[in-house]
Length: 55
Image (cartoon, rainbow, N blue to C red):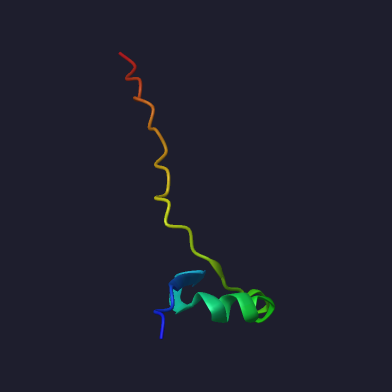
């Protein structure tokens, strides 16, 4: 039996792992329940501007 690839699904703070074939078959059900495919990209940090000090 070939090993199934696992994917991560996210809904708010909740993250679940499911088989990729399950996601493909039941994609409408997962989306209806608020789950979406989790992206492994790190979130971008906002660049902070240096604060000006009035003298």
